[in-house]
Amino acid sequence: MEKIPFEIQNFIKLYEQSFKDNWELPALSDYDRSNTMTYGELAEEIAKIHMLYDSLGIKPGDKIALCGKDSATWVKIFMATITYGAIIVPILPEFNPVDVTHIVNHSEACMLFVSDHIWEHMEPDKLLNVKGVISIETKKLMHEDPEIELSRNLRLLKRRFNRKYPNGFTKNDVLYIDRSNDEVVEINYTSGTTGFSKGVMLTGANLSGNVCFGIYAKLFVRGAHTLSFLPLAHAYGCAFDMLTPLAQGVHVYILGKIPSPRVLLKALSDVRPKLVICVPLILEKIYKNQILPLISKGPMRWTLAVPFLDSLIYSKIRKKLIDAFGGEFNQVIVGGAALNHEVEEFLHKIKFPFTVGYGMTECGPLISYSPWKEFIVGSAGKTIPDMESKVLSDDPENVPGEICVRGVNRMKGYYKNPEATKAVIDDEGWLHTGDMGTRSADGVLFLRGRNKTMILSASGQNIYPEEIEAKLNNMPFVAESLIVERDGKLNALVYPDYDAMDKLGVSLADMDSTMENVRKELNKIVAPYEQVAKIVLMPNEFEKTPKRSIKRFLYTQ
Image 1 (cartoon, rainbow, N blue to C red):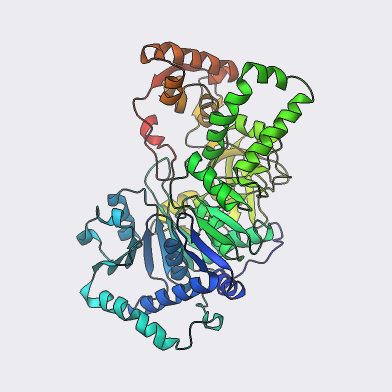
Image 2: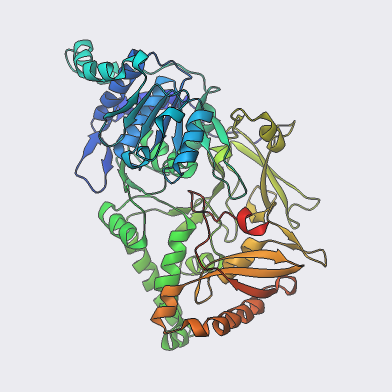
């Protein structure tokens, strides 16, 4: 294993030190409200929750479930739970109530913090181990087991706290549990595109590996500000929109609403973050809706063909894009899914400061990353120093194989599911990611697609549907697509872009001929063995996981 150039610190003590060192600095704000909590105030709120847990007899290692919209309160509960030594079970609010109940029960959570709109669709008598339920928004008691007297303990909390700290809560009072990095601190339930969710057990070492790499890579500097708009219950947003900034004295603004391009661009303009953590969809929408129409117009296309003039136009587009993201960021880090190749090539051409990383929930999440000035287009970054990677191929630099990883960030396993754990972690500790790709000699990864989604053509060629879908999704009138095999031929399932059709006056009667033209144009830019025989129109959007990935398994069986 490569020598780690940074020390993996105790995960819980990282925050004990940060809250003391950054006591006066702003820590958390809800973007749409004028509430800002300093690190000292955050530490005091955490101390109150610790006191509540203690009064209820909650012990280190007990599980606390958290399900609701991202907010400063959500972050406070998450941080209070891990610094108490309990295990946090963050649940994406997009899960349906039946799945939320299943996860709460499967994790054996003894308490649930939940948003009101989720709770009103849940059935309290189906929660098997939960002793109390508290609203994230109102902090009111929603449900309790009479034996633990939760309502009484909530009522007495303020008086008990003032009695314990008669001179006020100070930085010297911040002292968190001394808990080994080997212990599980989080169970994150994935919502994969190939089936039902599993509980990923992440240890202090797993999360500290991510955070300490973020510090080592200088992703943030003390006193900077950032906008958190990825789901915090998802490993990517959790690690780099919350845990890493809070370990470094950064001011985190929480968007707290769906990051549509209009909402997001206004928030970025207001907050002006120093780093933007992003998913591909946002960049792809901006490219498709704003940049592509601009550079595709007749006069502009001719101008871009003239040397010197093209670089002038590209620099103007680059400035416009940088300004749209707040104008003060060092780089945009794209992760969570593969970035569309056409979008990536264009951003590179205009010298936009972006990079693509790769990870998965099972690594909390980071596996590979390169700073934007070192980033190789088409790659997913370089394997980070506290991780190892290999490709199961006789020629890993040229012939794709399954990517396997191991190291500090690799999960402990799936909670109460040894069979699933054994299926992905082999006897030598390698985690089999299920992703196909190649690897350079110095550890740069190039992804091709999912092992489970790969289609073997009649001529023996490996077809990665994601690569064809990326090209198809750039075509006019295509909102989203899936490539599937039907009777030995490739079919494209397409949900049309009705907004684009309406704008250009394309009627439903013209739909078949329009899509046939799309199919012909697609087949001009894919390999002979990737030719699509038919486009099948979908009446509705594809069903998606809470993380907005298409539930591919529903359409390929």
